[in-house]
Length: 126
Image 1 (spheres, rainbow, N blue to C red):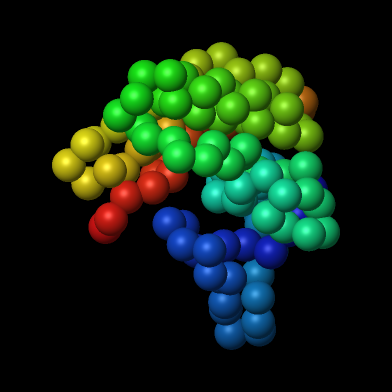
Image 2 (image 1 turned 120 degrees about the vertical axis):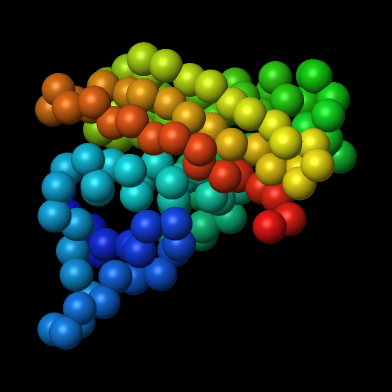
């Protein structure tokens, strides 16, 4: 599959002399697909309101119950992403000082390749 390539760590299109470039590898495509999905609240993108993670009103990462709900929602969203066969590892980290929440995981793709993503930041004040 192909999609517009994004600059690593941003949501900006990757430009070259001839214009916007496309993803060159399947894992790059899948990585962008997961990051885009985790960057949205469910229903936020009107073209596909199924994308994204649920918004939890009044949530706080410091509350164990809320963190468990968020982690579960993220696991389900990654595992249900088209092209992901199964989630093989999953880990989160919360930095209370910066209020940043990071996700690292490995997943087997439909084509047999393994997608490994580390320290995807889902929040914070940086």
